[in-house]
Image (tube, rainbow, N blue to C red; front, side):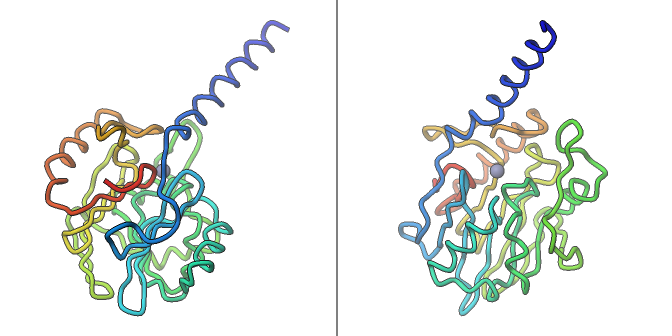
Length: 228
Ligand SMILES: [Zn+2]
């Protein structure tokens, strides 16, 4: 009986520790982001972003609930078939779920993130990351640090910011907008380590790099804390 109580208490603590950080996340509401031509889609605790590319779209991250993403983009008259590229900041479940909707898109991610989905590196204890069913791995284009892609009239540069996961990346679009994924937590204008981070020390190093870089951009779009 005593052992069972201890197991239950530990279970409750683990459950609370994994859910509680979400209470402090504040993604943007779905729709156009103020003073930009970017459309945010709110999906549970995070955002994915649609960047217009002529008649087409470029997407950063892919949310956690494919059905909810699908209904939001239909409501906003966005055609998933016109997405040219999906730039994944990393491969945690809450950033990849709707990738199968974008069947014509190339999937971009850091070359260092490959280990997170090919089974060679565990995300946490026994947990491994994986792309959702329906993701053709032939469509993945692995990016090195600082590699640029010209797509739909935009230039997208990958910036490797390891810590949250091994291959976490940010994307600088036209050197104007920065999409930061989970590279940091933004709290009252303070930048700290995001919850669920694999390597805090590495994340802090990356945050120093981000702080040096950040001033160059008009806006930074985070996955869970809105637009800075
Ligand atoms: Zn996340």
